[in-house]
Amino acid sequence: MAPKSGSAKNKKTFEKIRKQLLEKKQLILDGANEAITRQLVKQKENLPELGDQASAEIDNNFLLRLKGREKKLLAKIDQALERIDNGTFGICEECGQTIGLKRLEARPVTTMCIECKTDQEEKEKINKA
Ligand SMILES: [Zn+2]
Image (cartoon, rainbow, N blue to C red; front, side, top):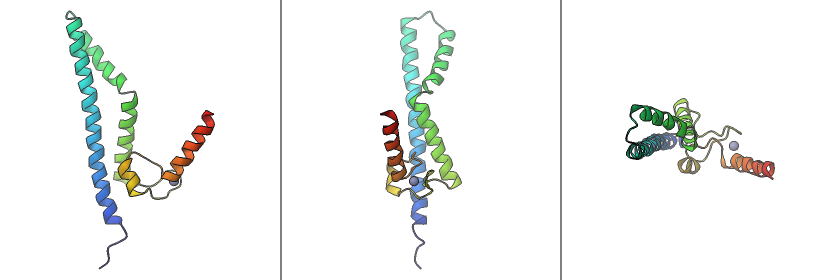
């Protein structure tokens, strides 16, 4: 019995990518938490009279910080996980073609095949110029 063309392999690879994405997500959250904790300790050392008020402000800062690069990446990771769940993972959102497994493994948060991504980057270059 001949195996069906690559679908089992895709599924296995997608499961592997899902694990990687979840690990990456955890790393970002841990890293952000650690940075905030360090900041908190530093502030408490410098300003020991500050109590819960400061802690509350730093909690807010945590969210603000996450509005930056990490938050964007977290959103991308969540979207990729969603695409794995709903079966659209690995399909280029521009042209609908399958994105190569190698590319997905290297950049699991990508939503475009290499051709469309290259096109987009070319256009961005022109727009910036
Ligand atoms: Zn494409």
